[in-house]
Length: 185
Image 1 (tube, rainbow, N blue to C red):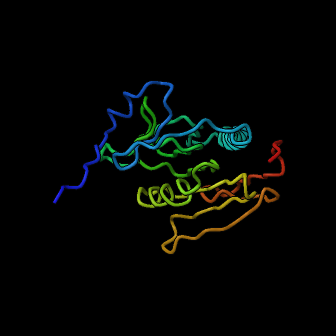
Image 2 (image 1 turned 135 degrees about the vertical axis):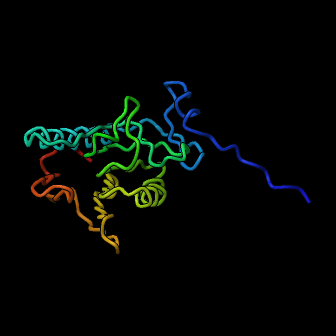
Image 3 (image 1 turned 180 degrees about the vertical axis):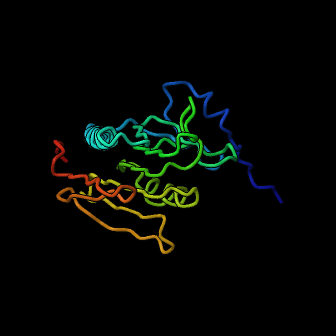
């Protein structure tokens, strides 16, 4: 009987050794290639980042918001480094020159049409396990936004559209009005 093929397990060192023109995430020791984002993806990313940044700045808040590419090392095992589209970190002790060590408070992913399961399943489970407080999935193809409150023991998800104004759960008074964004899906 032949032994099953062994997959190589990669580490954080391998991730940081990748050439700069290679976009990839390291999840449980395996690399997942990332394709170049679409124009709509970038328009949504820009609108969300600007809105969240301006809110934090106007409140003189201690949280920081980072758009991709921004490395987030979710666990201390050195085998998972992801690049969420938007990361909001409220604990400055998690920030390093390389990115973030530990779970951001709020993550937003904009679904890429080539691999929606990556955001809907793989990353949802990673973020839940890592202790992310709030996770949004923005899906331009369906026009839906899924908001996961991961602090709830039953883990609650609410569905919205690009015609809605959505309250950010980690803040008392931040509402993101998707109708205000100037993008065409």
